[in-house]
Amino acid sequence: MIARVGEAAATTAVGAALAGVTWSIFELGWPAAIVGGLNGLIGGWRRTYGWRSGRGVVAVLLDSTWAAPMTVSALVAHGVAVFTPARGGYVRALSERQDRHVYAGGLQLRRGFVIALGNTVNNVGRDVAASPRRQQLVRDHEDLHIWQARWFGPLYPVIYVGWMVLMGPVGAVVWLVRRPRRAPLFRVTETFAYYMNPFEWWAYSREGNWPPAGMVRELGWRRPMVRPVNRAPAAPPAAPG
Image 1: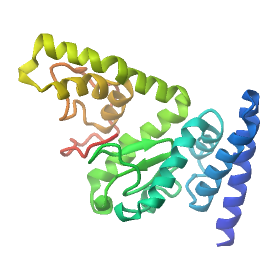
Image 2: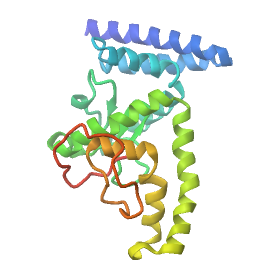
Image 3: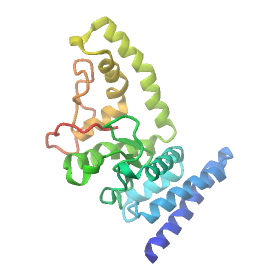
Image 4: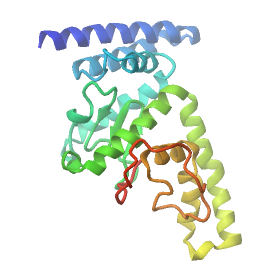
């Protein structure tokens, strides 16, 4: 308990200081310090960051500085999870010393779909402890989204949402012109707006699940972006975010 309190206090102080100094350039020092401090408090108490690895140190630095806007979304996700405990709580086995927070429930934007916001993963399902496929989804797909948010910082939601806004109508036009194998309008627009999104193409490829089952395959990228982490053939997919 003493070690946990000490880690929480240290991570709170470090997170607040890093965020405050970084965002004071934009006159957002105090709000950023609160965000960095809260993230540090939660991460330190739950022993989320892997301090013994360079990866864990980089995660703390990015969550508290460049990626602080995405950390705000993570704090929102924490809050939703706290107020929806019936849907499932914190999954310690997939979180501790792994630089992320995983919830069985939490925020749900689409039924059955997992979603990563900042350094959190939400809605992985109550059966995750007994489901190797779900665990692989978190480690290979959603964990990459967390690092995408860290690397791209405030640009991440702009690029992700911007792609959806621009490519959704493109999909609708393609559906009107080509009517590919009588695929419904929603599947075609989803293929362009969601599955062909570079961030999703990257994550599905890394997971070893490209092309995914929900995509209209004749319209999407034909080759995976990267080699999969797990070379074993993917089982029928749980819906990632």
